[in-house]
Length: 274
Image (tube, rainbow, N blue to C red; front, side, top):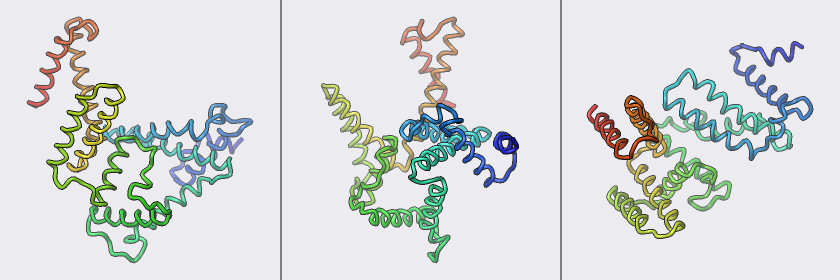
């Protein structure tokens, strides 16, 4: 079966041919008679969490500069688009060509400085301003009249908070200086400390996180990247604590908080002195 062998073994560097191969592989996997039972059973809703997970794994590979892993992670993410498009084609909604055409048309429309007669932007910041103007016109065309319309509800909460705040700030709803943002963070922290029910604590914690995201925006920092950095730092330091305990013939579960905290503080001091 030459056709089947071509799907399984094809090392051609031609991107169009490899894309066609991937689309055909997905069609075969979804075949209700000869396909994979797991793939056949999937729906948009069941696949959506994998789509989010794969996007985060791409970001993780980039964060770690794991360039040898990045092609595979990008391939996993591409598969998600192919999977959704295949299910949509089976349902008579749209196909992969519509997906590719949609983003191609959007890129052309949002880059009149490249594909139209608008002068080239003087800087990346100026280009962002142009994009925002174009996106505002698109929202108006979709009758999204409110400032916050169109900020996707399915975004991770941290990212959505950042986008909501940036949209509101462009409409003039923003603190005049950094002192106001810092004061708001402190205010929300006090209110969380004073909350006396689980529901109130959850509400105040959300307010505090929202204020911290706003602080990151005003500092021109990505809160997601900052938190990823802190997660990596925590893992590295806790692993070092575990290593020291192991050298003493102990495990974290066999140690007191005071012992672990003393080691942690030494490691943190060494980090800061490096």
